[in-house]
Length: 241
Image 1 (tube, rainbow, N blue to C red):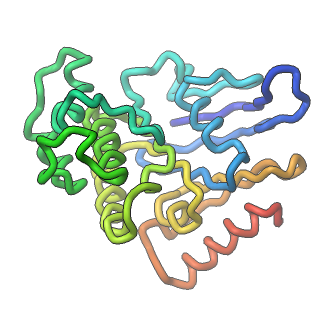
Image 2: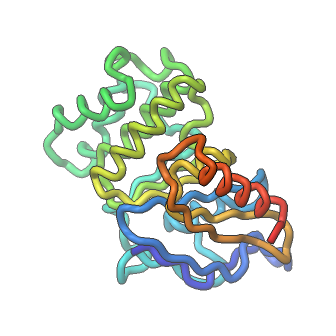
Image 3: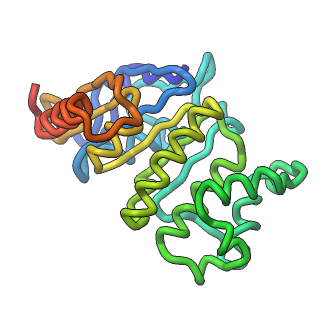
């Protein structure tokens, strides 16, 4: 279980809180989608969940342990990719195993590259890749460490619409098959509704920092139920009840 307990965040001596008294928990195998407009605290919250940023108040627990004590089970995909320019796609993806001094698992790396459409560029260097390809390599590298918890910051933003649609279904299936707990930060109402078993909607109104929605229609598109949850997300993003 991932548990956020009384999380509040402001910067310096500011009295303006980015996040305030946030409490939330969800189970392994599920996805938490965090959605909201720019500047509402999505990435700040992701960094708190990752243990990179310490909140002004409150704690994050993964199981019974503070998240800052659980590095080996957590992978993060940042917006800037963080790829090593002197390593090929395949070597970048294998990096987590090298850092752990584990045997290189070529079956798993081939499986992940196949899932993410990277086989044809496996021997390319980052400078030879598009932004969308770099984003997929960063995602593949995170999956390679076989995390229990994976944190994704706008993971589809640089990927073209056709590839994005293909990845939605593949990745959701992959996460469910492996039993991964996922936290997904996105601007997209559609992505939040597709992936999020639980959806945390943030906005900048200090009186309505967030609203949590339960979603029983993940993986579905175009139905009246999906449209209804999307409308609820949109309403909450602008401070609606």
